[in-house]
Length: 541
Image (cartoon, rainbow, N blue to C red; front, side, top):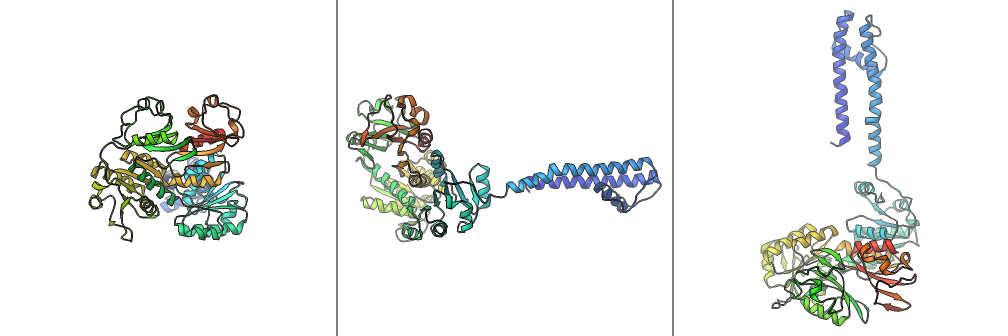
Protein backbone atom coordinates (compact mmCIF):
# COMPACT_ATOMS: atom_id res chain seq x y z
CA UNK A 1 0.00 0.00 0.00
CA UNK A 2 1.57 3.31 -1.06
CA UNK A 3 1.76 6.52 0.96
CA UNK A 4 -1.49 8.05 -0.30
CA UNK A 5 -3.60 4.94 0.09
CA UNK A 6 -2.28 4.57 3.63
CA UNK A 7 -3.20 8.18 4.41
CA UNK A 8 -6.68 7.68 2.93
CA UNK A 9 -7.28 4.52 4.96
CA UNK A 10 -6.22 6.23 8.20
CA UNK A 11 -8.47 9.22 7.46
CA UNK A 12 -11.49 7.01 6.75
CA UNK A 13 -10.86 5.09 9.95
CA UNK A 14 -10.75 8.33 11.96
CA UNK A 15 -14.04 9.54 10.42
CA UNK A 16 -15.70 6.20 11.17
CA UNK A 17 -14.59 6.37 14.80
CA UNK A 18 -15.88 9.96 15.07
CA UNK A 19 -19.31 8.92 13.70
CA UNK A 20 -19.59 6.04 16.17
CA UNK A 21 -18.66 8.29 19.13
CA UNK A 22 -21.12 11.01 18.05
CA UNK A 23 -23.90 8.41 17.63
CA UNK A 24 -23.29 7.08 21.14
CA UNK A 25 -23.26 10.61 22.59
CA UNK A 26 -26.43 11.52 20.69
CA UNK A 27 -28.32 8.50 22.12
CA UNK A 28 -27.14 9.37 25.62
CA UNK A 29 -28.04 13.07 25.20
CA UNK A 30 -31.53 12.35 23.85
CA UNK A 31 -32.25 10.06 26.80
CA UNK A 32 -30.86 12.50 29.40
CA UNK A 33 -32.06 15.88 28.07
CA UNK A 34 -35.02 15.09 25.81
CA UNK A 35 -36.43 12.04 27.61
CA UNK A 36 -36.48 10.04 24.35
CA UNK A 37 -35.00 6.65 23.64
CA UNK A 38 -33.26 6.32 20.26
CA UNK A 39 -31.90 3.21 18.65
CA UNK A 40 -28.28 3.27 17.55
CA UNK A 41 -29.42 3.20 13.89
CA UNK A 42 -31.62 6.28 14.45
CA UNK A 43 -28.76 8.08 16.20
CA UNK A 44 -26.40 7.14 13.38
CA UNK A 45 -28.81 8.64 10.82
CA UNK A 46 -28.95 11.96 12.64
CA UNK A 47 -25.15 12.10 13.06
CA UNK A 48 -24.49 11.46 9.36
CA UNK A 49 -27.10 14.04 8.33
CA UNK A 50 -25.49 16.56 10.67
CA UNK A 51 -21.90 15.91 9.57
CA UNK A 52 -22.78 16.02 5.87
CA UNK A 53 -25.10 19.03 6.36
CA UNK A 54 -27.54 17.22 4.09
CA UNK A 55 -30.68 18.11 6.07
CA UNK A 56 -32.69 16.12 8.52
CA UNK A 57 -35.05 13.32 7.64
CA UNK A 58 -35.31 12.23 11.24
CA UNK A 59 -35.10 14.61 14.22
CA UNK A 60 -35.48 18.25 13.21
CA UNK A 61 -35.78 20.10 16.55
CA UNK A 62 -34.73 19.71 20.15
CA UNK A 63 -36.16 21.30 23.28
CA UNK A 64 -32.98 21.40 25.36
CA UNK A 65 -30.20 23.90 24.77
CA UNK A 66 -27.59 21.19 25.33
CA UNK A 67 -28.83 19.04 22.44
CA UNK A 68 -29.16 22.04 20.13
CA UNK A 69 -25.55 23.00 20.86
CA UNK A 70 -24.45 19.39 20.39
CA UNK A 71 -26.08 19.24 16.94
CA UNK A 72 -24.49 22.59 15.99
CA UNK A 73 -21.12 21.15 17.04
CA UNK A 74 -21.71 18.14 14.75
CA UNK A 75 -22.59 20.49 11.86
CA UNK A 76 -19.40 22.49 12.38
CA UNK A 77 -17.39 19.30 12.57
CA UNK A 78 -18.78 18.22 9.18
CA UNK A 79 -17.83 21.55 7.59
CA UNK A 80 -14.37 21.35 9.15
CA UNK A 81 -13.86 17.84 7.79
CA UNK A 82 -14.68 19.04 4.27
CA UNK A 83 -12.15 21.88 4.47
CA UNK A 84 -9.49 19.54 5.91
CA UNK A 85 -10.12 16.84 3.32
CA UNK A 86 -9.47 19.17 0.38
CA UNK A 87 -5.89 20.22 1.20
CA UNK A 88 -4.87 17.05 3.01
CA UNK A 89 -6.32 14.38 0.73
CA UNK A 90 -8.16 15.47 -2.39
CA UNK A 91 -5.69 18.03 -3.77
CA UNK A 92 -2.56 15.93 -3.04
CA UNK A 93 -4.20 12.89 -4.61
CA UNK A 94 -4.92 14.85 -7.78
CA UNK A 95 -1.37 16.24 -7.79
CA UNK A 96 0.08 12.78 -7.30
CA UNK A 97 -2.06 11.42 -10.11
CA UNK A 98 -0.81 14.15 -12.43
CA UNK A 99 2.81 13.61 -11.38
CA UNK A 100 2.63 9.87 -11.92
CA UNK A 101 1.27 10.29 -15.41
CA UNK A 102 4.19 10.24 -17.84
CA UNK A 103 4.52 13.16 -20.26
CA UNK A 104 3.50 12.31 -23.82
CA UNK A 105 4.91 15.25 -25.75
CA UNK A 106 7.81 17.70 -25.79
CA UNK A 107 8.34 21.27 -26.97
CA UNK A 108 12.00 20.74 -27.92
CA UNK A 109 13.25 21.65 -31.40
CA UNK A 110 16.61 21.15 -33.11
CA UNK A 111 17.14 18.28 -30.70
CA UNK A 112 18.05 14.60 -30.74
CA UNK A 113 15.24 12.06 -30.36
CA UNK A 114 16.53 8.90 -28.65
CA UNK A 115 14.15 5.96 -29.10
CA UNK A 116 14.55 3.51 -26.24
CA UNK A 117 16.29 4.12 -22.92
CA UNK A 118 18.85 1.81 -21.32
CA UNK A 119 21.78 2.42 -18.95
CA UNK A 120 24.11 2.56 -21.97
CA UNK A 121 22.21 5.67 -23.07
CA UNK A 122 23.71 7.67 -20.20
CA UNK A 123 27.10 8.08 -21.90
CA UNK A 124 25.44 9.51 -25.02
CA UNK A 125 23.31 11.82 -22.85
CA UNK A 126 26.44 13.12 -21.09
CA UNK A 127 28.13 13.78 -24.45
CA UNK A 128 25.09 15.69 -25.74
CA UNK A 129 24.76 17.74 -22.56
CA UNK A 130 28.43 18.72 -22.71
CA UNK A 131 27.93 19.87 -26.31
CA UNK A 132 24.77 21.79 -25.25
CA UNK A 133 22.56 19.74 -27.58
CA UNK A 134 19.01 19.12 -26.27
CA UNK A 135 17.58 15.61 -26.40
CA UNK A 136 14.49 13.65 -25.46
CA UNK A 137 14.09 9.96 -24.66
CA UNK A 138 11.08 8.11 -26.03
CA UNK A 139 10.14 4.86 -24.30
CA UNK A 140 7.08 2.62 -23.98
CA UNK A 141 7.62 2.00 -20.24
CA UNK A 142 5.52 4.62 -18.35
CA UNK A 143 7.23 4.04 -14.99
CA UNK A 144 10.66 4.46 -16.59
CA UNK A 145 9.57 7.72 -18.24
CA UNK A 146 8.18 9.03 -14.94
CA UNK A 147 11.47 8.18 -13.23
CA UNK A 148 13.52 9.95 -15.90
CA UNK A 149 11.24 12.99 -15.74
CA UNK A 150 11.48 13.18 -11.95
CA UNK A 151 15.28 13.08 -12.32
CA UNK A 152 15.15 16.10 -14.61
CA UNK A 153 15.66 14.22 -17.89
CA UNK A 154 13.44 15.12 -20.83
CA UNK A 155 11.45 11.98 -21.69
CA UNK A 156 8.06 11.09 -23.13
CA UNK A 157 5.94 7.95 -23.17
CA UNK A 158 4.58 6.29 -26.30
CA UNK A 159 4.74 3.30 -28.60
CA UNK A 160 7.99 3.57 -30.52
CA UNK A 161 6.60 2.27 -33.82
CA UNK A 162 3.69 4.75 -33.92
CA UNK A 163 3.90 7.90 -36.02
CA UNK A 164 1.92 9.93 -33.48
CA UNK A 165 4.58 9.14 -30.86
CA UNK A 166 7.35 10.50 -33.07
CA UNK A 167 5.21 13.53 -33.89
CA UNK A 168 4.77 14.12 -30.16
CA UNK A 169 8.56 13.96 -29.85
CA UNK A 170 8.82 16.68 -32.54
CA UNK A 171 10.87 14.32 -34.69
CA UNK A 172 10.04 16.37 -37.77
CA UNK A 173 11.76 19.37 -36.12
CA UNK A 174 14.69 17.39 -34.69
CA UNK A 175 18.26 17.46 -35.91
CA UNK A 176 18.52 13.66 -35.70
CA UNK A 177 16.93 10.48 -34.34
CA UNK A 178 18.71 7.58 -32.66
CA UNK A 179 17.05 4.20 -32.26
CA UNK A 180 18.63 1.70 -29.85
CA UNK A 181 16.14 -0.99 -28.86
CA UNK A 182 16.62 -4.26 -30.75
CA UNK A 183 17.25 -4.98 -34.42
CA UNK A 184 13.62 -5.69 -35.32
CA UNK A 185 12.13 -2.76 -33.41
CA UNK A 186 14.82 -0.45 -34.74
CA UNK A 187 13.85 -1.33 -38.32
CA UNK A 188 10.19 -0.43 -37.66
CA UNK A 189 11.17 2.83 -35.96
CA UNK A 190 13.34 3.75 -38.96
CA UNK A 191 10.49 3.16 -41.41
CA UNK A 192 8.07 5.18 -39.26
CA UNK A 193 10.51 8.07 -38.83
CA UNK A 194 11.33 8.14 -42.53
CA UNK A 195 7.62 8.38 -43.39
CA UNK A 196 7.40 11.34 -41.05
CA UNK A 197 10.42 13.20 -42.46
CA UNK A 198 12.66 12.61 -45.44
CA UNK A 199 15.24 15.14 -44.15
CA UNK A 200 15.65 13.72 -40.64
CA UNK A 201 19.07 12.15 -39.94
CA UNK A 202 18.43 8.65 -38.58
CA UNK A 203 21.10 6.65 -36.74
CA UNK A 204 20.53 3.00 -35.79
CA UNK A 205 22.41 0.88 -33.25
CA UNK A 206 22.82 -2.59 -34.75
CA UNK A 207 23.36 -5.74 -32.72
CA UNK A 208 23.69 -8.29 -35.51
CA UNK A 209 25.84 -6.84 -38.29
CA UNK A 210 23.96 -8.93 -40.89
CA UNK A 211 20.90 -6.68 -40.46
CA UNK A 212 22.80 -3.42 -40.95
CA UNK A 213 21.98 -3.45 -44.67
CA UNK A 214 18.27 -3.89 -43.84
CA UNK A 215 18.34 -0.82 -41.61
CA UNK A 216 20.00 1.23 -44.32
CA UNK A 217 17.42 0.00 -46.81
CA UNK A 218 14.65 1.01 -44.37
CA UNK A 219 16.05 4.55 -44.36
CA UNK A 220 18.83 4.81 -41.77
CA UNK A 221 21.54 7.29 -42.68
CA UNK A 222 24.08 5.73 -40.32
CA UNK A 223 24.40 2.40 -38.54
CA UNK A 224 26.77 1.77 -35.66
CA UNK A 225 27.84 -1.64 -34.39
CA UNK A 226 29.26 -1.12 -30.91
CA UNK A 227 29.19 -4.80 -29.92
CA UNK A 228 31.47 -5.72 -32.78
CA UNK A 229 33.81 -2.82 -32.01
CA UNK A 230 33.83 -3.83 -28.33
CA UNK A 231 34.71 -7.45 -29.20
CA UNK A 232 37.55 -6.31 -31.46
CA UNK A 233 38.87 -3.94 -28.83
CA UNK A 234 38.88 -6.52 -26.03
CA UNK A 235 40.62 -9.06 -28.28
CA UNK A 236 43.16 -6.48 -29.41
CA UNK A 237 43.91 -5.68 -25.79
CA UNK A 238 44.51 -9.37 -25.14
CA UNK A 239 46.92 -9.70 -28.07
CA UNK A 240 48.67 -6.49 -26.98
CA UNK A 241 49.38 -7.80 -23.49
CA UNK A 242 50.64 -11.09 -24.91
CA UNK A 243 53.45 -9.35 -26.76
CA UNK A 244 56.10 -6.75 -26.06
CA UNK A 245 55.45 -5.38 -29.54
CA UNK A 246 53.74 -1.97 -29.66
CA UNK A 247 50.23 -2.21 -31.10
CA UNK A 248 46.91 -0.42 -30.86
CA UNK A 249 48.17 3.17 -31.05
CA UNK A 250 46.55 6.35 -32.36
CA UNK A 251 48.93 7.96 -34.85
CA UNK A 252 48.59 11.74 -34.92
CA UNK A 253 51.76 12.39 -36.95
CA UNK A 254 55.05 10.74 -37.81
CA UNK A 255 56.46 11.94 -34.51
CA UNK A 256 53.46 11.60 -32.23
CA UNK A 257 51.33 8.62 -31.24
CA UNK A 258 48.98 8.07 -28.30
CA UNK A 259 48.28 4.76 -26.61
CA UNK A 260 47.37 3.12 -23.31
CA UNK A 261 49.72 0.56 -21.81
CA UNK A 262 48.86 -1.99 -19.13
CA UNK A 263 51.67 -2.47 -16.62
CA UNK A 264 51.82 -6.17 -15.75
CA UNK A 265 52.43 -7.41 -12.23
CA UNK A 266 56.07 -8.45 -12.82
CA UNK A 267 57.12 -5.49 -14.96
CA UNK A 268 60.25 -3.63 -13.88
CA UNK A 269 58.08 -0.49 -13.59
CA UNK A 270 56.10 -1.93 -10.67
CA UNK A 271 56.94 -0.23 -7.39
CA UNK A 272 58.58 2.78 -9.01
CA UNK A 273 57.22 6.29 -8.94
CA UNK A 274 56.60 8.13 -12.19
CA UNK A 275 59.78 10.11 -11.57
CA UNK A 276 61.86 6.99 -10.81
CA UNK A 277 60.60 5.25 -13.97
CA UNK A 278 62.24 7.86 -16.20
CA UNK A 279 59.22 7.84 -18.52
CA UNK A 280 59.16 11.61 -18.75
CA UNK A 281 62.74 12.73 -18.16
CA UNK A 282 64.76 9.96 -19.80
CA UNK A 283 62.36 8.65 -22.46
CA UNK A 284 60.72 11.97 -23.37
CA UNK A 285 57.20 10.51 -23.17
CA UNK A 286 54.25 12.58 -21.99
CA UNK A 287 52.12 10.85 -19.36
CA UNK A 288 48.65 12.19 -20.13
CA UNK A 289 46.98 10.21 -17.38
CA UNK A 290 46.83 6.87 -15.62
CA UNK A 291 44.28 4.47 -14.17
CA UNK A 292 45.16 3.30 -10.68
CA UNK A 293 42.75 0.50 -9.70
CA UNK A 294 40.20 1.81 -12.16
CA UNK A 295 40.41 5.46 -11.02
CA UNK A 296 41.64 7.90 -13.65
CA UNK A 297 44.29 10.39 -12.52
CA UNK A 298 45.02 13.15 -15.05
CA UNK A 299 48.72 13.96 -15.42
CA UNK A 300 49.93 11.94 -12.40
CA UNK A 301 52.61 13.66 -10.37
CA UNK A 302 56.20 12.42 -10.01
CA UNK A 303 55.38 10.81 -6.66
CA UNK A 304 52.56 8.63 -7.99
CA UNK A 305 53.68 5.02 -7.65
CA UNK A 306 53.10 2.54 -10.46
CA UNK A 307 51.78 -0.85 -9.43
CA UNK A 308 50.65 -3.97 -11.20
CA UNK A 309 47.59 -3.35 -13.41
CA UNK A 310 48.24 0.40 -13.63
CA UNK A 311 47.20 1.61 -17.08
CA UNK A 312 49.30 4.45 -18.48
CA UNK A 313 47.91 6.86 -21.05
CA UNK A 314 50.97 8.16 -22.88
CA UNK A 315 51.98 10.15 -25.94
CA UNK A 316 55.33 10.27 -27.73
CA UNK A 317 57.46 9.04 -30.61
CA UNK A 318 56.84 5.48 -31.71
CA UNK A 319 60.38 4.33 -30.91
CA UNK A 320 60.09 5.67 -27.37
CA UNK A 321 56.65 4.14 -26.87
CA UNK A 322 57.98 0.81 -28.15
CA UNK A 323 60.71 0.93 -25.53
CA UNK A 324 58.19 1.73 -22.81
CA UNK A 325 55.90 -1.05 -24.00
CA UNK A 326 58.73 -3.57 -23.59
CA UNK A 327 59.15 -2.40 -20.00
CA UNK A 328 55.46 -2.90 -19.14
CA UNK A 329 55.37 -6.66 -19.84
CA UNK A 330 56.22 -9.34 -17.31
CA UNK A 331 59.89 -10.22 -16.79
CA UNK A 332 58.97 -13.78 -15.80
CA UNK A 333 58.90 -16.80 -18.07
CA UNK A 334 56.39 -16.29 -20.86
CA UNK A 335 53.11 -18.15 -20.43
CA UNK A 336 51.27 -19.92 -23.26
CA UNK A 337 49.55 -17.59 -25.70
CA UNK A 338 46.06 -19.02 -25.32
CA UNK A 339 42.98 -17.05 -24.37
CA UNK A 340 39.77 -18.31 -22.77
CA UNK A 341 36.66 -16.50 -23.98
CA UNK A 342 33.68 -16.58 -21.63
CA UNK A 343 30.47 -15.83 -23.54
CA UNK A 344 29.77 -16.44 -27.22
CA UNK A 345 27.34 -13.70 -28.16
CA UNK A 346 28.11 -10.99 -30.70
CA UNK A 347 30.95 -9.58 -28.59
CA UNK A 348 32.44 -13.01 -27.86
CA UNK A 349 32.27 -14.23 -31.48
CA UNK A 350 33.91 -11.04 -32.71
CA UNK A 351 36.65 -11.39 -30.10
CA UNK A 352 37.33 -14.99 -31.17
CA UNK A 353 37.53 -13.94 -34.83
CA UNK A 354 39.94 -11.13 -34.00
CA UNK A 355 42.15 -13.38 -31.87
CA UNK A 356 42.22 -16.04 -34.58
CA UNK A 357 43.28 -13.47 -37.19
CA UNK A 358 46.22 -12.62 -34.92
CA UNK A 359 47.21 -16.27 -34.56
CA UNK A 360 46.01 -16.62 -30.96
CA UNK A 361 44.31 -19.89 -30.00
CA UNK A 362 41.11 -19.74 -27.94
CA UNK A 363 38.90 -21.90 -25.76
CA UNK A 364 35.28 -20.77 -25.77
CA UNK A 365 32.97 -21.28 -22.78
CA UNK A 366 29.23 -20.64 -23.04
CA UNK A 367 25.98 -21.86 -21.52
CA UNK A 368 24.63 -22.81 -24.96
CA UNK A 369 25.94 -25.86 -26.78
CA UNK A 370 26.39 -24.49 -30.28
CA UNK A 371 29.02 -24.50 -33.03
CA UNK A 372 32.11 -22.61 -31.94
CA UNK A 373 31.65 -23.39 -28.23
CA UNK A 374 34.33 -25.69 -26.84
CA UNK A 375 32.99 -26.14 -23.30
CA UNK A 376 29.35 -25.88 -22.30
CA UNK A 377 28.73 -24.44 -18.86
CA UNK A 378 28.93 -21.33 -16.70
CA UNK A 379 32.12 -19.30 -16.66
CA UNK A 380 31.55 -18.93 -12.88
CA UNK A 381 31.76 -22.72 -12.31
CA UNK A 382 35.14 -23.88 -10.97
CA UNK A 383 34.82 -27.28 -12.68
CA UNK A 384 34.14 -25.57 -16.00
CA UNK A 385 37.15 -23.30 -15.53
CA UNK A 386 39.32 -26.31 -14.74
CA UNK A 387 38.08 -28.03 -17.90
CA UNK A 388 38.87 -24.87 -19.88
CA UNK A 389 42.45 -25.02 -18.64
CA UNK A 390 42.87 -21.73 -16.82
CA UNK A 391 46.24 -22.93 -15.48
CA UNK A 392 47.52 -23.14 -19.05
CA UNK A 393 45.99 -19.94 -20.41
CA UNK A 394 47.44 -16.44 -20.55
CA UNK A 395 44.21 -14.44 -20.39
CA UNK A 396 40.47 -14.69 -19.97
CA UNK A 397 38.09 -12.49 -21.95
CA UNK A 398 34.77 -12.11 -20.12
CA UNK A 399 32.21 -11.11 -22.76
CA UNK A 400 28.94 -12.30 -21.18
CA UNK A 401 25.96 -9.96 -21.39
CA UNK A 402 25.42 -9.60 -17.65
CA UNK A 403 27.54 -7.46 -15.33
CA UNK A 404 26.69 -9.42 -12.19
CA UNK A 405 27.90 -12.65 -13.83
CA UNK A 406 31.05 -10.93 -15.05
CA UNK A 407 31.88 -9.56 -11.59
CA UNK A 408 31.28 -12.92 -9.96
CA UNK A 409 33.32 -14.72 -12.61
CA UNK A 410 36.22 -12.33 -11.97
CA UNK A 411 36.14 -13.14 -8.25
CA UNK A 412 36.08 -16.88 -8.95
CA UNK A 413 38.91 -16.66 -11.49
CA UNK A 414 41.14 -14.79 -9.07
CA UNK A 415 40.63 -17.58 -6.55
CA UNK A 416 41.08 -20.44 -9.00
CA UNK A 417 43.94 -18.94 -11.01
CA UNK A 418 45.37 -15.81 -9.32
CA UNK A 419 47.96 -15.09 -12.02
CA UNK A 420 45.63 -15.17 -15.00
CA UNK A 421 44.93 -11.87 -16.74
CA UNK A 422 41.26 -10.86 -16.90
CA UNK A 423 39.98 -8.55 -19.62
CA UNK A 424 36.30 -7.85 -19.11
CA UNK A 425 33.28 -6.38 -20.80
CA UNK A 426 30.87 -4.29 -18.75
CA UNK A 427 27.46 -3.15 -19.87
CA UNK A 428 27.14 -0.22 -17.48
CA UNK A 429 29.92 2.25 -16.72
CA UNK A 430 29.04 2.28 -13.02
CA UNK A 431 30.17 -1.35 -12.78
CA UNK A 432 33.67 -0.68 -14.13
CA UNK A 433 35.18 0.18 -10.69
CA UNK A 434 33.58 -2.95 -9.21
CA UNK A 435 35.27 -5.13 -11.83
CA UNK A 436 38.64 -3.54 -11.11
CA UNK A 437 38.16 -4.12 -7.39
CA UNK A 438 37.23 -7.73 -8.14
CA UNK A 439 40.57 -8.20 -9.90
CA UNK A 440 40.12 -7.43 -13.61
CA UNK A 441 43.17 -5.98 -15.36
CA UNK A 442 41.28 -4.15 -18.12
CA UNK A 443 37.60 -3.24 -18.45
CA UNK A 444 35.70 -1.58 -21.28
CA UNK A 445 31.96 -0.96 -21.25
CA UNK A 446 29.39 -1.30 -24.01
CA UNK A 447 27.88 1.97 -22.79
CA UNK A 448 31.14 3.80 -23.42
CA UNK A 449 31.63 2.41 -26.92
CA UNK A 450 27.99 2.98 -27.91
CA UNK A 451 27.84 6.50 -26.52
CA UNK A 452 31.09 7.58 -28.15
CA UNK A 453 30.23 6.10 -31.54
CA UNK A 454 26.85 7.83 -31.54
CA UNK A 455 28.30 11.12 -30.30
CA UNK A 456 30.89 11.06 -33.08
CA UNK A 457 28.04 10.90 -35.59
CA UNK A 458 25.69 13.37 -33.89
CA UNK A 459 28.07 16.14 -32.77
CA UNK A 460 29.26 17.94 -35.86
CA UNK A 461 32.18 19.89 -34.37
CA UNK A 462 33.63 16.97 -32.44
CA UNK A 463 35.40 13.90 -33.77
CA UNK A 464 36.02 11.09 -31.31
CA UNK A 465 39.18 9.25 -32.36
CA UNK A 466 38.98 6.48 -29.77
CA UNK A 467 35.51 4.99 -29.27
CA UNK A 468 37.01 1.63 -28.34
CA UNK A 469 39.42 2.51 -25.52
CA UNK A 470 39.23 3.49 -21.86
CA UNK A 471 40.46 6.98 -22.64
CA UNK A 472 38.82 9.46 -25.00
CA UNK A 473 40.75 11.34 -27.66
CA UNK A 474 38.79 14.03 -29.50
CA UNK A 475 39.51 16.43 -32.32
CA UNK A 476 37.51 19.63 -31.86
CA UNK A 477 37.48 23.38 -32.20
CA UNK A 478 37.50 25.47 -29.02
CA UNK A 479 36.01 28.91 -29.77
CA UNK A 480 35.34 29.74 -26.10
CA UNK A 481 39.05 29.78 -25.21
CA UNK A 482 40.36 31.43 -28.39
CA UNK A 483 42.88 34.18 -27.66
CA UNK A 484 43.94 32.65 -24.34
CA UNK A 485 47.10 30.76 -23.48
CA UNK A 486 47.07 27.19 -22.17
CA UNK A 487 48.67 28.42 -18.95
CA UNK A 488 45.98 31.06 -18.51
CA UNK A 489 43.18 28.55 -19.08
CA UNK A 490 44.82 25.82 -16.96
CA UNK A 491 42.82 23.05 -18.61
CA UNK A 492 44.46 20.27 -16.66
CA UNK A 493 43.40 21.69 -13.31
CA UNK A 494 39.94 22.78 -14.48
CA UNK A 495 38.96 19.78 -16.61
CA UNK A 496 41.52 16.98 -16.13
CA UNK A 497 42.31 17.01 -19.86
CA UNK A 498 45.55 17.42 -21.75
CA UNK A 499 45.90 19.18 -25.10
CA UNK A 500 48.08 16.69 -26.95
CA UNK A 501 48.41 18.60 -30.21
CA UNK A 502 46.92 21.44 -32.23
CA UNK A 503 46.19 21.46 -35.95
CA UNK A 504 46.91 24.93 -37.37
CA UNK A 505 47.14 25.83 -41.06
CA UNK A 506 47.54 22.17 -42.10
CA UNK A 507 50.38 21.74 -39.60
CA UNK A 508 50.31 19.60 -36.44
CA UNK A 509 51.85 21.44 -33.51
CA UNK A 510 53.01 19.26 -30.62
CA UNK A 511 55.38 21.48 -28.66
CA UNK A 512 52.72 23.14 -26.55
CA UNK A 513 53.90 25.00 -23.50
CA UNK A 514 51.92 27.16 -21.07
CA UNK A 515 52.51 30.20 -23.29
CA UNK A 516 50.84 28.61 -26.32
CA UNK A 517 47.87 30.77 -27.39
CA UNK A 518 44.81 29.11 -28.91
CA UNK A 519 43.48 30.67 -32.10
CA UNK A 520 39.87 30.66 -33.21
CA UNK A 521 40.52 28.42 -36.25
CA UNK A 522 42.73 25.96 -34.33
CA UNK A 523 41.63 22.34 -34.05
CA UNK A 524 42.66 20.86 -30.72
CA UNK A 525 43.37 17.19 -30.07
CA UNK A 526 42.49 16.59 -26.44
CA UNK A 527 42.88 13.46 -24.30
CA UNK A 528 41.35 12.38 -21.00
CA UNK A 529 38.65 10.15 -19.58
CA UNK A 530 35.00 10.64 -20.56
CA UNK A 531 34.09 12.96 -17.68
CA UNK A 532 37.15 15.12 -18.25
CA UNK A 533 36.45 15.43 -21.98
CA UNK A 534 32.85 16.42 -21.27
CA UNK A 535 34.07 19.13 -18.90
CA UNK A 536 36.44 20.38 -21.59
CA UNK A 537 33.71 20.46 -24.26
CA UNK A 538 31.38 22.37 -21.93
CA UNK A 539 34.13 24.88 -21.13
CA UNK A 540 35.79 25.42 -24.49
CA UNK A 541 33.40 24.50 -27.29
